[in-house]
Length: 80
Image 1 (cartoon, rainbow, N blue to C red):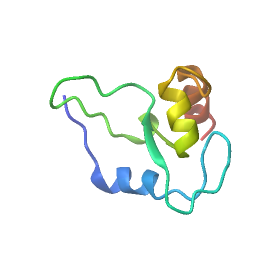
Image 2: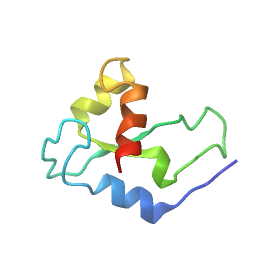
Image 3: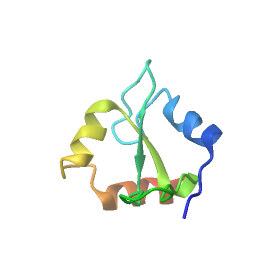
Image 4: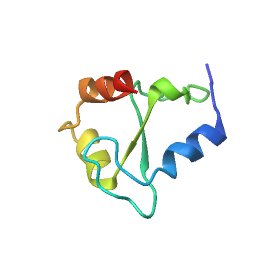
């Protein structure tokens, strides 16, 4: 399954502030998927409830299994 919205992805990457730590990001944010895109082709799920803008540090921390956690990202999306 592929749900891809390039304009929405660009909007999240252009965010000027990390949604987790609120650090200003003049160069834009990294795009984190709350629910992973999977490993196969066509598995992109780029919809608003599945995307979070993170600074590079928070993005790296998330992918290393630290905070923000998967549950933290779900909570961020829920607060929107």
